[in-house]
Length: 174
Image (cartoon, rainbow, N blue to C red):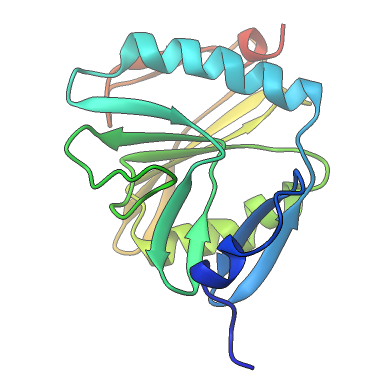
């Protein structure tokens, strides 16, 4: 049997787990905890207020289909309104994908998924740590992420790309 594909995974039972594929390798994650979900909810509010009309915020789980053997379920996606959005997946790269770290996914999010996002051409990637609280902002430059900003605790991140926004990491966990 060859590597798993998106169509293979769609045949799995709905068991409450989150499934992703990277080059045919299955990544399985449990449902996120309350600290993670609080952080995601607060981020949704900030992003909804910040994104311009041509962009849309989508909360995971929602699939970003890269190719038959690779798809992701970021915690949050910001996509162009004219993107090819299906009922369960987008075929176009998001403008921004946000990962909120959890104890069960921390190493994968910071390593394997980060490299896979680079390889898939994701222009902007945020990593939020609700435990510390911190935000790291990465931009894809020449095929690799470059950290453009970092904020911790009560520090404020003010960015203008890919859209103007202000984030205070401590405010995402309070």
